[in-house]
Length: 408
Image (cartoon, rainbow, N blue to C red; front, side, top):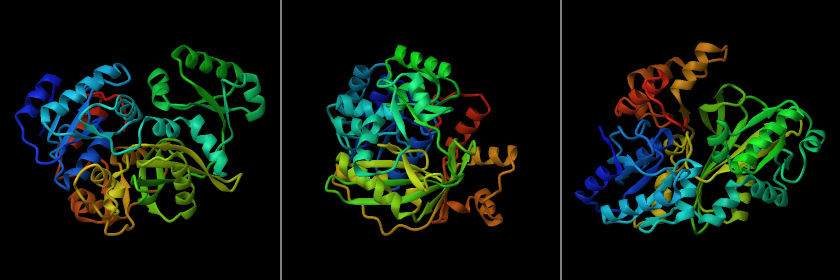
């Protein structure tokens, strides 16, 4: 079990270690960070997991070599840069950065720490993708459908309500800052007064927000393109279908399956190419029955919660990214069908709703016995009998014995 150390103690451990290849620096250190660590560890890449707290799922994993504290980039970006540069000096090797939430991506891209290699596009390109105002302008130019959206800097709340109808949803241009300020990254409002209240809150926090038409969707039809685009334009990708969410209509994915939807890949890659983005990303689409087409919601320029699915399906996106900035090599042997399951959310859903269980008895047997770890078609987020400590950590969080600031 890897101990989560103070920054000073982590530096001392790294100074005493020897690395024969560039370590991966994974931030933050929870569910997504754990998945990235496992994907890289499978290819013998040393992993340093960093975070602002030590209660995430990744630090105790046997796939994490070192773990410890760094300044949180939303609170102290300059301190974050200084901390990361100190880690690079302590290892004596350049580090390969993996930001597992938007604020960590911005921390790396905005400060460009010395001694750190970024396996993704630079600041201007990342901003053009993560900022939904920019993203939707690009989608408009490419005729990629997206929900009707109005910037609240350009229209007043009454006009937005008249044009989009009520209820409508309010989204930030950059979601993580809004989530820190408000507690969520999407707010549904039913009156102009509620819309005005959210707008005032956003103004006080200095956050750009937009109003978006509330669209009808089909449960179980959300699709995303999971991809790594290399600096030379090479693409490794698959489409994932979020078959089950918790809560059902708008919650986090808890069962995702590989799917065959060429239109998702075509539209997502067109947007990525137009922005010039390279690196790991997830392009999220929902199916709107009223418009009878998939609508682009968002693109995450980073790993995300179910990235384990790509590894199991034969497309190890973290390793592909690592190989673009090091002497390592990685080549997929082919992409196959696979499923990803996040048991805490899935079990909660089965226990509290009438949703149909999509797993077969053999699947449950494989999960309980641990045999699924040898199954090329089934994987889980966090739960692995061969790596038990992260599961223990997540259980303690679910029971309220520990706290963590981010579900991913």
